[in-house]
Each structure stands twice: as C-alpha cells, then as structure tokens.
Length: 59
Image 1 (tube, rainbow, N blue to C red):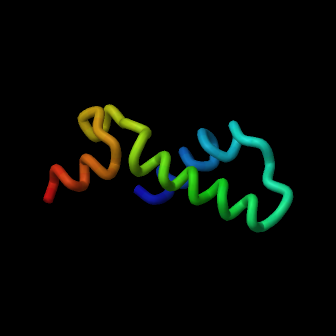
Image 2 (image 1 turned 90 degrees about the vertical axis):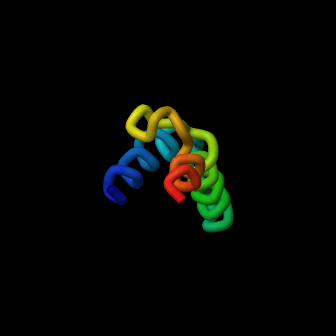
C-alpha cells in the first residue's frame, strides 16, 4: 500500500512541480503533496473519496 502511495506521490506530485533548490523548498513541497494526497485527491478504489474521508468513514 505505501509503495503505491509513494509511487503516485513521486509520479504525480514531484514530477509535475519545479525541482526544489533548497532543503526548505523540498520540505515545503513534500508537505504540500502529503496534504494534497490526503485531503484533495480522490480515488475510485476508495469510492471516490479522499484518503481522509475514506478513513473517517471506516471509523
């Protein structure tokens, strides 16, 4: 599961943003990406819910 997440993260998020020049820029980009994949991006494998909504529905 986590391999799929990081594969998507690298392919979808990192490849479509400018390359960070500093560690601070990299940290900010990763933080934004994690936020996006957990609260914005929906998946058909999760009944078209975000990861956060899917997790909350399961609880």
